[in-house]
Length: 259
Image (cartoon, rainbow, N blue to C red):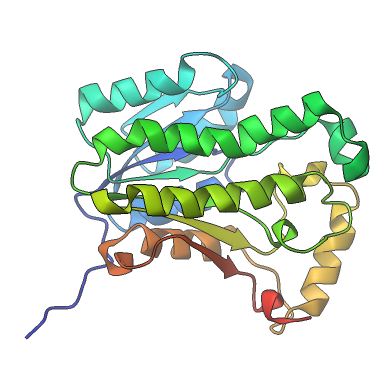
């Protein structure tokens, strides 16, 4: 008889990058990981952000918390060096960071600056590939790379603007990482949630209008929560999802099914 594959994360060690506060998507995922039994490390952007991040990580018993601004040379590498020293391995990571300069984000895509577009791509997309590169030697028994996207990557969403092409590039990066790292049993997936009221999303112009329109348009007439995203994330990094890779998985109340 074949035994069922476990969705427990007991014995697994993971890194969460992108907790901004207790209502951020990464916080919802971190709580789900910890609730399923995982041992976690996490990062915070800078000292200003630490007071919002530490209550989240303290509550779930994170083993260590490190500063990580991917724009600062060496900070991301330092995080993985500490993981190497203290754990010697890594089973999964969540990449949940994105940024675009306000002037570029609020303007037309065809008007975005080269520096703004490059910065958004570097922080929101290339940093995922950097993390995959650093995680690869630590995932000696396989693992899972997870990131966060949005359906504005494949359809034009009013006011999402430049982040649409950037998230499209991130989704493509996920597929390539899945194929390139698959022989080492390292999986790569992206979660594509519906609109959620987070601090990061508040930078999008007219975001309240987007939330209202989404709630009205989804089949279940409700918005997605960070707990919904966390539940999917915890499953995807578990052994129960061992055959799921290279996918962009929506958790949006069915909104993606509508024309």
